[in-house]
Length: 444
Image (tube, rainbow, N blue to C red):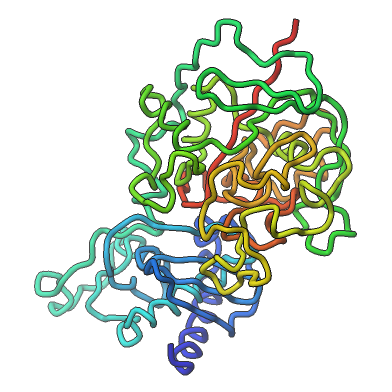
């Protein structure tokens, strides 16, 4: 990319942000980041071997596919949509470090330059966005503007829909899958730390987390902590069982074959479809459907965090010091510019579950840091910690985004901390989103 092109695009995008106050909010529906901040004057774009583009702007790290570029919204006041380049499934847009909403606009246009679209950023022949055509014009259009003599874009929407938003017939938000008939096969009520139990539905091994208090969130002593992780507070939880690893493709296939789950979006991708790899490209509703079928549910944020860090407020599942040998994160095998070249975890993408026993939590849960980001039950609320119940907090009653925990193979060390919170629209199905299940023990 030529430097003068980058500067020109960045200046234009800053104007778009100033002219359209709704633009950042609409972008937040993709990134799950409600913050608008950062340096709009620096962008680094690198083309990856898979055809996607890695972008780094300050602390922001993202990956975009060509299809995601044409689906990014632009200002209704000043611009027309970018031309379509190809069709296919959107890829990965996990909000790794926050403050991504405004910066994502910079990214989309910058990569468009790489694709050879510099001279056609505002092509006069493209049809306007749907938001412009919904209001009839008060002026008579010129004959030369009629679309009969020029190519028209495919019907556009503000957000990618082929992967993110499934057809209404396949949405499971209001469906209740038929749970497996355990007939007495439930996790025991009495157990000790280190005990395991195997779930009959899918063969998943679960570990026991005893009742008691733990420290949730981050203190000011953690210089990587963000505001939504504070204040650190004491929470009491009843005992529960949680999957030792993330749900695998092989386990998820049983739910698909039972007719209770739809197929994930990545089973045709050899990088993510091995039987022992974590299932990815599943939405929050997909994860919830699986959990219900298996006889459990998604963990609350509090349950997930206690299972990851224990009771002492440690930063990582194994302690307070980061160790790149204990997890799958963005190390030297990673394709992105922010990779940690001083570590080698052995995998460029998702690793088979349980590959890092040295990264186990105090209760024996594996892969709580890295590999894939995990859906939890909660709606995201940045200020919830300041008013959440001290005993068995469930979740905010409503919201726009669902929470993900743990970070992924594309994440840096700050994102894989136990207290780090990610959030995104619940219908997102990206290649680094997975989940695990919890179950409450049967009381006598």
